[in-house]
Amino acid sequence: MKLCARAFSRRNLLKNLGVAGAGLAVAGWRAGASTLAQEPGGAKPIESFTGPGVNPHWNSLGPYLSEPGKVPLILLTDRPVQLETQRHYFQTAFTPNEAFYVRWHLDGIPNAVDLKEWKLRIEGKVAKPQAWSLSELMQKFKPVSLAAVNQCSGNSRSRMQPRVAGGQWGNGAMGNAVWTGVRLRELLEVAGVSSGAVQVQFQGLETGQGPKGLGSNVFLKSLDITHPILDECLVAYLMNNEPLPMLNGFPVRLVMPGFFAVYWMKCLTWIRILDAPDNNFWMKTGYRVPDTPRGNTTPEEIKAGKVKTIPIERMPVRSFLISPDGSSKIPAGMSVTLRGIAFSGFGRVSSVEISDNGGKTWRSAQLGEDHGTYSFRTWEAPWTAKSPGKHTLAVRATDEKGNAQTDESVWNPGGYLWNRIERQEIVVGNAS
Amino acid sequence: MRNRLSAIFAGICAAAITAGVVYAQLKQSVYRPAELGTMQQAAPAALSTDAVYEVSAYPVPALELAPAEGRQDVQIYCNTCHSPRYITMQPPLPAETWEAEVNKMTKTFGATIPDESAKKIIQYLQAHYTPGTRNN
Image (tube, rainbow over all chains, first blue to last red; front, side):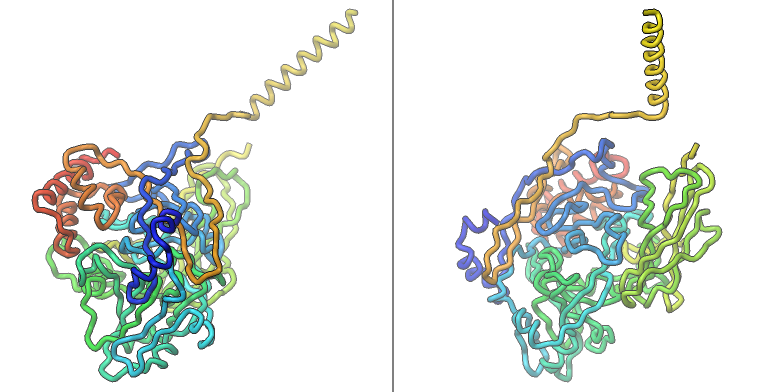
């Protein structure tokens, strides 16, 4: 910030940049900032990579990095920024903003937004193109709130066998928040979608160094104008009743409940109504999954070129044991509480079950408060380990549509849709 | 005098026994030296009341890439669009995957890498970041 402010007059910089009136300033990268890695509590640091086998850890492996507006999170990549949330932040139904994971596609992300200049625009095949300031969005439209999970399409990619290239996420590329903002449908109605409209395209302030027209220059996502999910979308300016962190999309981001985060455009600035299907890289090539049950296929089928793909959409049902996390022993005979979360992009979580014999037998966990269909649902269950030894806990969830987690793994070349039953080994020690 | 000596002797014995019992129960007060301050807290930002909402520059920590032929090409060309941490973050990948990744960067994403350098980058990745070759 200091570098930026000293080198240029801030106002002139904003004026000169004038990126379509968005008023964003992308400050220079500060190279060689402090290398992190304080040694963890007397222990050896974790290994620097895993593979070619499965990453056996709950989270990914990077060191901790403290980014603006964030507590130290696990660093996957620094430019563009990708940060994973540590397991213990999922003890509660809502993920704190400062610990919420971060995933950008291109390196040009804003360090500053000038709300005098910034407007949310609707353009293209509409009767009346619109441009609203943040204060107009807050004042002209009724605020609506909903709880919804935001999960990266590639969450848990490091579980896949064979491993696939891409962000090597553990399980922490997800978070849950109460999002407050304006209904997308209301904004579209004011603009008046013209007949002949085919798709609606979303674009934020993110830009890349690649040539114009390619996926390395601009990140765009689109949906059919008739897609029913558009009725459920929000343009959110509040996240857990606070402004969005810059790294999570200040000033507004699209909220598409139940859908993977790729559609939740950060720093949403352009809503474009198209008269032809969007064939940009991020629709035609990226973020596609096999049109098969659970998006599963094999490297051989991909090589044979026979796999039909479709754009990724809703999140399959998942559940996680958050504590105990296996990092310390439990004395035999002690009664502890197992705690975790569950969610599904297809509907409310209807049951969570746990097993302490690796999945041979199951019993029900108690579900926590219901914050809405697309929220994390906390769960807990008492557990007593009777004998010393290694015990394998497993957790599985079922949603109201009857979708249940299974023990089958998932593989596809993008590394998407992982939702296999999670397991945790717990070491129980002698109590006398 | 004799009584006094026995009392002292008894006291020393009791202390030794207690110490032995405690030692058997606890491994205590083990400390080790460590680095402090390699990850500093951020100072509070100076905020103005205008309409500009700003955060500090995003940090780009130094990264160790295998010191070998081709590293400079990686640092120049890969680094144009993304930090080479995209390489070290990956699991060891098969040689043909690295070739496909570099080709994706040039063909799909339009990276302007001279053929000679693209070849060197592929060879570098295959020589240091595959299951058989990666060691850090």
